[in-house]
Amino acid sequence: MKTAIYYKTKRATVNLLIHLFLLTVAVTCIFPLLWMVSSSLKTQEQIFRDTSLIPREFHFENYYLAWKEGGFGRYFLNSIAYTVLVVIGIVVIASLAAYAFSRLRFPGRNILFVMFMAAMMIPIPGSFVPLYVLLNKLHLRDTSFGYILCMINVGLSTSIFLLKTFFDKMPKELEDAARIDGCSKLGIWWNVVLPLSGPVLAVVVVFNALNVWNEYVLALIIFDNKALMPLQVALMTFQGEFITRYPLLMAGLTITALPIIIAYLLMQKYIVKGVTQGAIVG
Image (cartoon, rainbow, N blue to C red; front, side, top):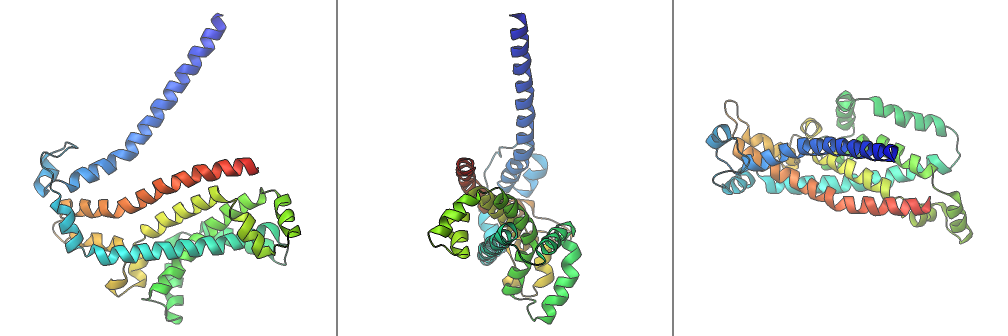
């Protein structure tokens, strides 16, 4: 009896410590977001004097000024277009490549896969110079198409690795049944493989959408035309040589972060749904 009580108490203590640790991590992650939103509703003077998270006065005009002065409308549409096109391109190309690496047998298959994986070890800034030279020679620098191709290339290696790992564990009997029904390889990819790949596709979409939405340095290298720049560039409008307008900067950061947070929350539902489907299939 005492042993059972001891183990029950020990289990409860361990669970309590785990929950406290997770709560601490959650607060650590959420606090900067709360501080950002709070600062976006203050004046420049209040940011340095008022340390409370709830402002005494709410200055919602900061959002209007940030949107108007930063030219957020144009940049916002640019970022949405880049994110959607890049994510679609990565999902299509990476899923086709991963399915080929997982199911097809062709000469040089292992070498090509190792090359894709080796690209993951190259830091993104390390590829800026060859990308710049290549885009210049192809006359794609300072074009939206050139930027989209670069961002697709950035996300391919990791996406192919994640998708291939998932496809390797997928039962081949499902594909055999589809093949008996007359499906081609592309038909199996479209009708069988993709619908069952909900968990990993959701991860690929969220990861790459976040990567494209937050990209800044590569856009500065590729674009000369400010009209083609993504949303992150607009944030530099509020940072001058001698002073930074923090309320407008925080309002701009809130506007920038909000769409990707909403997209993540919406995609989280599909991740859970996809995990459930994957468990049933497995």
